[in-house]
Length: 194
Image (cartoon, rainbow, N blue to C red; front, side):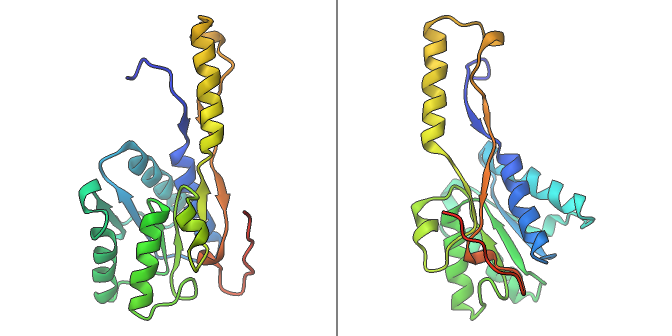
């Protein structure tokens, strides 16, 4: 598969943008929740680490929750709940996707923890779940239509036998941060972009 042409989202930059945004809203104790069994999780984690390091916040592996596909419905929220019960200082969470973010928000609400006042939460993918949740989830847009257009252009180039070095198709899509209510900073207004 490595020698096959493909179009990818810059997930490292996406993780970076989310973490940077939280830092800019005054958050310092940011938990990362990432999927361990795909490259997207590893890349989003890499961006999270990079943003922390640039801000002078040491990386703490105890602030990262890793989960696998088969335990995605229970482990992220359960592990974060256990961290909070241990009195760990947490003021934000960068979640692997909007589905995990929504589960985390539900768990926090059950514990009487207010989002975003007590803990800010981000997702990823700008899914319908994130857009329509009671608290709008700050996320990274995953431009599926644009990905489809680029893939079609790439296929047409392959049919025309355009050499790889002459390809005009971009292979890495830059992510777009969409700020919603789930990350409003203390004394900062929330910018809502849809």
